[in-house]
Image (cartoon, rainbow, N blue to C red; front, side, top):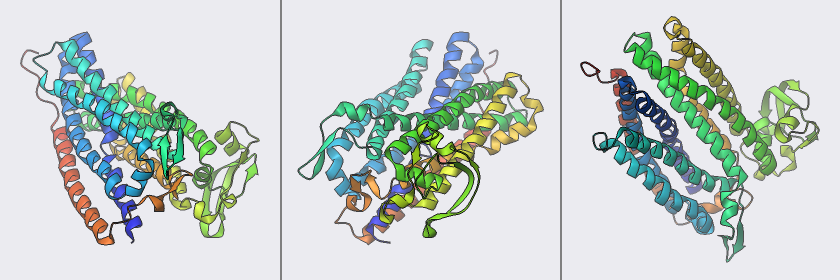
Length: 441
């Protein structure tokens, strides 16, 4: 457990923890905005109660997301000083824009939304939550532009021992970054939908505030099904980007060891990295992988054996995470489709199996998103900036093992406490349900 390993563990732990809250913020902000917009258009007080109830859960989650995100940026200077020095001229720009533009915009308007109920008109107040939702997605854009540059570095030159930006437009238009944004954002919207559906399903099964939660479920189901379709489509597009710019990651994702044209897609496989082959593979779809990766059934797919061992990512972690993410994505799409279909026909009360499925599926989008980030980040190894800077060269040189171990333990304890508080507050308020409707409403 050297400084490099501990620093990687610390960043992985804090990043994974932070991303428990970010996707729910992205998804819930839009759903709350939709509910308040319906209140403005219809004048139906039930939509106002829905806005306030789901908005309260959104605010609890938002607060934790802000706190946990700050620590991540500290680590660039504390644990990854060599990385920050080498690429800070490029990497710092989108993060600075995210903080000064998107996050400040989001924070300002969320304050207006919280305190402006009796001070703004209904239309103006609804507009503030839309600004919050747009700013949240805009924040994700800039962060993923930074991460996308690490996956596919563009618009720079190497000068004076550093990577220096020469084309900001290339960074902003990086197709790899936009593929990541579409896939990340759509999966976040799917999580927000399942969060609302799960809580609504629990209350519907108990005949609690039936009209309130049936409407909530219906809105979330429609939003979730469309988000699921977008997630699958953006995932397929992301795979094409991986095949084009990170062939080692694709080979690890699919367990491809030998380069070949017209490569089949195996529905079942199990890699044996020590033997540089798959110990088991079956149900191959002829030319399937070549078609999926390059949109050409006769194209060539590069195998892991074409790369030195020290240039390959951890195969099992990448392979299993990718397969798990895909299976969960397909399952969630099926459940979202059934939920949308049943809620449209107003048959939720007579479908207890679907209500249980919606409730029990709540952890699955969280898990799928975490697996997706493992594929993205572990699959990029040994590079911290793909093809440019190795992870082992980006770690801070002056840290001791004891210092990193102490900070890792401190962060784990601190974040564990925050998680317990957050989940307790979400559970308590979700179980309690909305405030009673005013008399005569």
